[in-house]
Image 1 (cartoon, helix red, strand yellow):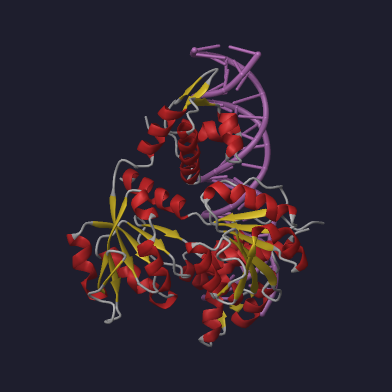
Image 2 (cartoon, rainbow over the protein chains, first blue to last red):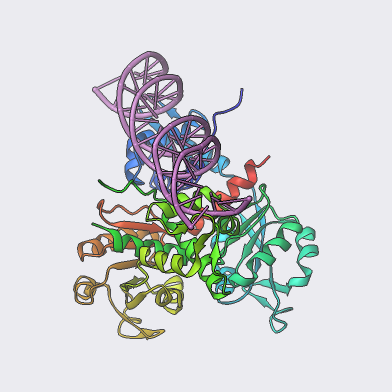
Length: 209
Length: 209
DNA sequence: GTATGTGAACTATTTCACAGCT
DNA sequence: AGCTGTGAAATAGTTCACATAC
């Protein structure tokens, strides 16, 4: 029989649990209850148990969760034992900051190539990542088995870049452009949209009691 | 009678509508239907109408929405006629990129001060923003009427910075640290957490059919 | 006694279906 | 005819309540 459907919102919470559990394990804390864990990450004890419950039974009644066990389980669930190849498209202000960002490697993501259409940049390399012409994208993405494309181009060019990434066989897109990308159902898009966050805050400030 | 409750998730969509409507108005397109607008931002026509419906009746049966009218209405709703003062805490790699980011001003947010604990930086200024000692935070935040605090310090220091911001009277926090901040109910926190996004993508790649 | 795991109840959000306006 | 606005239905997600395990 099929496992019950896992809410979308559970996944980012698992990431948060893993972060906290890792810190606890490093402090040599052996077990933790769902209530304590929840308190540390501002979630209820039930939420924690429900989220974990979608993936198995990791706890021990009466004492809680073993931190090293739960850490291992969460790492497995989140695919931290696997690595994926990443390409960044657009080496402007943001793009070059991303090339220097250590977080990709830290999360099992190999930033293998960058693309740009500026001939002054093509052929050079930044933070150890070679910059190629956008024209070479389809071939390079296939050759290097890239699964994640990072869109760091201006909004006007974002859709066209997304189309190219998709047709080259990318599996998901991390989109920094303030644009709504249109992609096939089976492609996952994660928007990182600072303007959106800022205006949401502005709404909150205007409308708070 | 009170207006029906507005879903949290409606607000970021309003931002997206405004972005699209602004582009349409600039292209001298006068009216648009909810179906067309929805198609452009990958949402259903009903979703668009429901979202707008929480704030009033902006459309005309049979023809759709007047772009300039809707633009004005959305700008009002999102508080784009107001401005707010912002302080950035932590002038490291990310913090200094934020000081240079033009998006704050573009969205009506005045980045007035930055704080850091590094004595080499204190007293200097970057991208036109003066850097003060973290010790001066409470007073400076009150004096300059800062409503938004941006947390750009390492995870270990994030909670302590958040506490200081809150006790200084800040209204909301934009948190770039990979940490779960604990704040009073009436303070709005927006997390911008790249690690979280990256691991979510990793989960997606591992678990896709 | 303490804490997990989980159906059932509840709440939030989205989608449907259609009445009503231009 | 074309499109909005909105109650009602459906779906998704969270919280409650409690049986069960240590």
